[in-house]
Length: 444
Image (tube, rainbow, N blue to C red; front, top):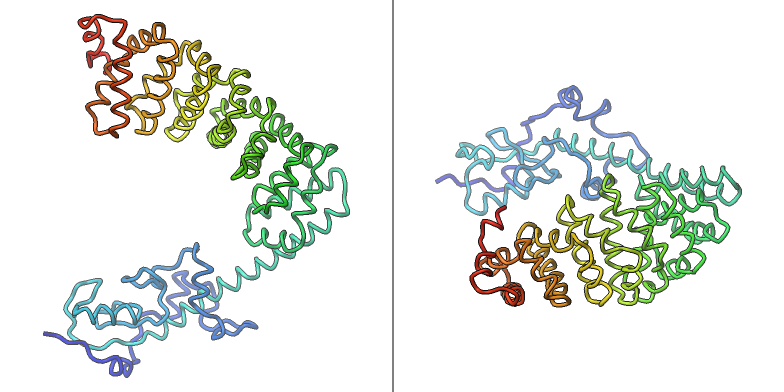
């Protein structure tokens, strides 16, 4: 059986080249300058591993990728088949007793591996060009951020709005800009621009910047001041869709892990603004952001009654048809939270589409949606059994419950279904109730 030669013997052969610079330039692998780049860094001072890590999101030419690890090669070597691999990977392949070419699976007729110096040079050159260009862009971005921050301290009115807009665009487009804002005291200054006399034009841009930053506890506490929260909520109600989404995300950031913040932030104006946002199905990102925040707000029991009073229940019920599973689960979660209070159960009972819309969701979406829907139906039917149970059965609930019981769902979910089925059967004779359970009604 074939045995590979030692690494020392393999290193003796340096004559094989599988890729030449002219071909690389012609094929677009390198743009013009090939080989060592003339820079202040010097090619050998640049670590390929570091460059590859920092350029992780960039598309690397396939000729630079080791077929075994699918990572850029640092020490490429070529087999007799013409295939090139990272030295450490092919040595490991041989050590496992494989004496074939991993790509072609051909048995090797020559036991040597040849360092591919030309390809190695091309890899270093390509990564160096990309790395230095990235560093140059990063330096340009950092310099521009500093200029804009200095300019913001001097200008007023529309000029300030324009400067903030530019800063927002830079922060959104370049991750390095975030660090520069923080290191140059930008967060504290930007926060100071929000106040009772801030125009909505300025406030919208400031909020657009803040949602891209990692705010510390002091910054969050500053934003939770009543005057600033009031401004953010006002802008949420009156701004563009993009601004509404930014306001929603910022409020969510402030409430994250802070139960006390829910009481400070939640207001009728906020709840109304969020309901308007989620009802605009043309902007799915806005629907999702709004529902996520509504769920967070409603997790605070003291807010639920206010939310019911602004007419949230019928609006959310009417919103359900056509939602994707993620949004649908959030709506059901909110309705389940509201069903935990008497006012919420009454509102759910009084909404004519609650039972039909919720029954349709059983076993139609995710198991979690089915669980939430069952919980809501249980609350309503238990609240007003004579009125709601018969409506639910007419909507096909009994047949759906039988399907859940016979499914592979969680045992607790199946037990709840059995209890709800028993509750629904109380108003019927056995024969009539059995007819209500026909699966044809479910299919229809």
